[in-house]
View 1: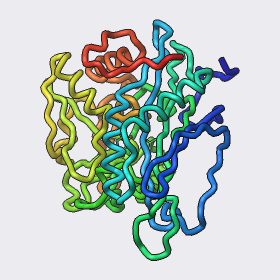
View 2: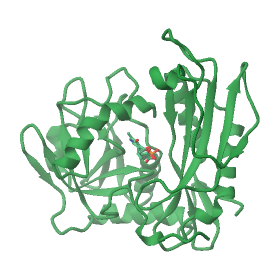
View 3: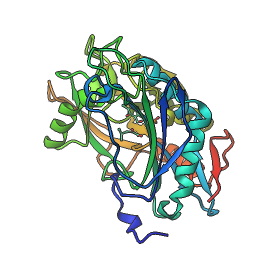
View 4: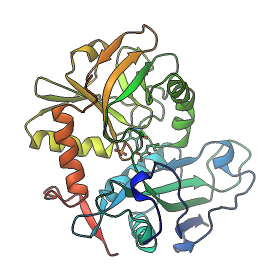
Length: 340
Ligand code: PLP
Ligand code: COI
């Protein structure tokens, strides 16, 4: 076990001992390689540097109550990486390569998995880039797939405490028929200006309106949005948002604990009617929203004033993290044990 202050870990980079790499060259994926370097050597004309051929994933391994290590829904992350690769014309990583790289990365860095009870986890960051050289705009012939890991705490410094979010309409994260549904690097670059401005103006994150009509909620910069009212868990359906695996899981949990699930366009005009609201994602887990302020009109939608998450957010959080840390029965079969 490494000498780390596990309880105060932020969501940031900590150097670990190994990362796992695989190269696509001459029309095929090679063998997995174990590296202890934090750097990659890239051709100056590689497509990732110029034309944005880059996609990534995020998933977590948890040290459970029983001491065992669980990896959460890795197959869904693999499927989404396929989709992202197709979206920006990269060579998809096959399932065996993805699985083995993830498991090896956790096993080989097992001393970095935060102990049970600290609230931390080991974040896996698989990513795929066009490493081949092209000067004309076209897909690369060579690709590099890497999985690195880093121990993390909560994404928002507040942890499981309600945060303030800013609704923005003057910047778009993704076009209606663009790449918003894929986890490609360009989406995050497009969201940076709104996100940084939100931080400077005192908010934890920005929430984007849909880029076509500005009448609906798309999602937060790093997480999906949900609202709860009248016994219903309501979350946006939009082609320009990332299909969150956490949200997918929460929808199942919501039904399990007695909420009705609605996945449909969520109008900004509806924001005032929610009893609770939150953002969800691997990094964000469930981050309850205290209030949303519309940057254009100044209007505020307040969900909690007591500084505590609402009762449904608490139930959803307890169930989800309970499964991840082995405290609640994994009846959906979401976790796979890693041998370490
Ligand atoms: N939306 C965006 C833009 C994200 O970056 C993420 C993080 O992966 C999510 C939503 C949540 O997705 P997931 O729950 O699969 O991590
Ligand atoms: C995740 O939740 O895994 C993310 O990728 C969100 C953010 C760190 C980009």
